[in-house]
Length: 94
Image (cartoon, rainbow, N blue to C red; front, side):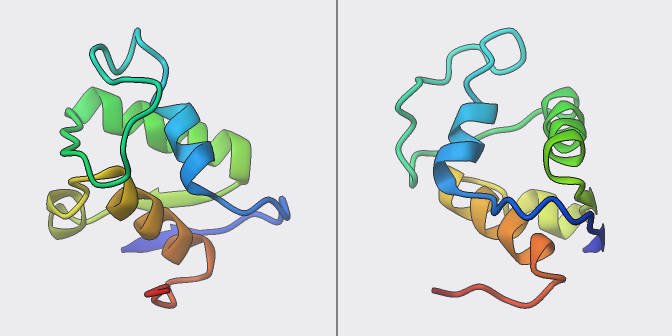
C-alpha cells in the first residue's frame, strides 16, 4: 500500500464510505443500506472514481497494490483499508 495523507482532520467511517458507494451512476445496483459484510465487487473504473473522491474529500492519496485490491471484498474491508491508510499504514484491527 502506498499512501500520502492530507490534514483534513476528518476520519473515514463506514457510513462515509457507504455514502461514497451510493452514487448509482458509478455503482449501479448497490443498495443505499449496504451491509458491512455483503459481498462488494469494484470494477476498475469504480475503484479509480472512489479513490479520486477519497483524495478530494480527505486529502488521502492511496495507491493500492493488486493484493490490496483483491482484499476489498466488503464495505467493512474497504473501510478498514482506507482507515489504515489514513492512519499512515498502521493496522486498525479494532
